[in-house]
Amino acid sequence: MEILDFQPKSWVEPFRIKTIAPLRKISYEERLSALERASYNLFMLRSEDVFIDLLSDSGTSAMSENQWSAMMRGDESYAGSSSFYRFEKSVKDITRFMHIIPTHQGRSAEHILFSTICKPGDVIPNNFHFDTTQANVESSGGDPLNLAISEANYPHLEHPFKGNIDLERLQQTLEEVGTEQIPCVMLTVTNNAVGGQPVSMANIRAVSALCRSYGVPFFLDACRFAENAWFIKQREDGYADRTPLEIAQEMFQYADGCTMSAKKDGLTNIGGFLALNDTELAEKCKQKLILIEGFPTYGGLAGYDMEAIAVGLQEVLQEDYLRYRVESVATLGQKLLDADIPIVRPVGGHAIFVDASTMLPHIPQHQYPAQALGIALYLSAGIRTVELGSVAFARKDSEGREQAAPLELLRLALPRRVYTRSHLDYIADALIHLKHNAAHIQGVRITWEPEQLRHFTARYALCLPSNTEV
Ligand SMILES: *Cc1c(COP(=O)(O)O)cnc(C)c1O
Image (cartoon, rainbow, N blue to C red; front, side, top):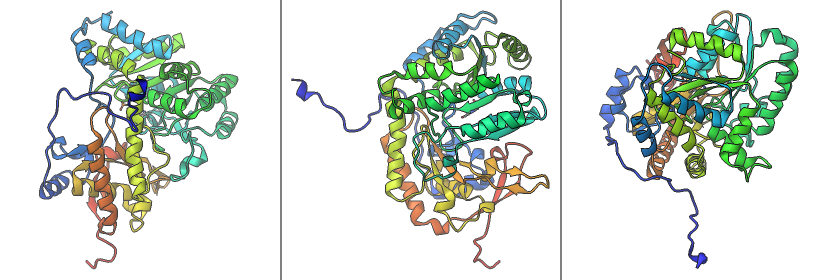
């Protein structure tokens, strides 16, 4: 009677809900006053004033019963805790790197790595540096160079591996800058900044070969390695029958090390690691770890955090999970596309990126259209998102003038295992509502900003519509 075996047409959440956190519907007046208190910076809102929180997929995952129960056996010994060895084994099973250094999150791994290998004047090529990576390279005096393929500049152009690095420009950089001044090459999987786009195995393999021929170490920024592995399985010839674990192992095999935020594909609320094969470098990094994080068998983490990561790294590679994860993001994306909302295509692994310049053509880049759209989405529906456009990525030229970012994107990051299909419907409907009322959305100006990573703490004021007489 196998004919009776039901094959669902679409993805289903591969979990049931066991503990709930209530969501509070907030009135328009409350949202308006919360925004004013936050100086229109959505990072400054209290989470209790948010209905659906798409600010970040980082550290926002719901943990499984297996993770929670593993935490109960957390060994909090100062040195040599059994939790560390379980964590180390879990990381090594996937990455096969020799030295595993636990940190409290990804940026700490980046800081330890770059403050050790990067000197003033060095260049670190990447497909696209994440903001903390860029800042850590810069704070070591290095130049973070983004070499994404040119297709990544066109938000509406379909490409199966839009996260790839431009191999020709990478080779040219290795030739022109010289290997003395390139302490490593990095690849960010998936490429967060251009839309959570995957990097192909062919691209990873080619970067690896190029780096080896020039004798330059190659690191992965591996935050979303499992989502990247899933895209390779779906889209790249020869991988359909490989498991996500096998694909991930192959990805890591081409690299000499990685930085990782376990707050993403570790399915935990905190944690990260630096992993590498170079024993001498690992030793230097561990000395720095002791200085700023902790002893090498706990780094920046409690024993129970390492337990949760050890389990999370296994769960994140399960096929049912990855299908749900990637396809639920795609479902939201398709609803928006069906309503003619301009989003980065194809839809990436962890987020939808709305192209705010196209959606709000009346707002010029210097009035930060993506920030304006984020404010409007919160004000209209209580949904919190993040700007990844000129507020986050503009660079200053030598005279201190701002060079706009190539794209003005608003990111709707989906926390892992947190929201259901009806939440996705609510989000889509809210954006469609804004599309119909786009002309009423106002640009913003920055009234205060810090020196670095300004999007976290900048304050804003709304610009008056240009046709308004003051
Ligand atoms: C989140 C992230 C980081 C930094 O990790 P944290 O845990 O937030 O410090 C680095 N790179 C990428 C691609 C990220 O998404």
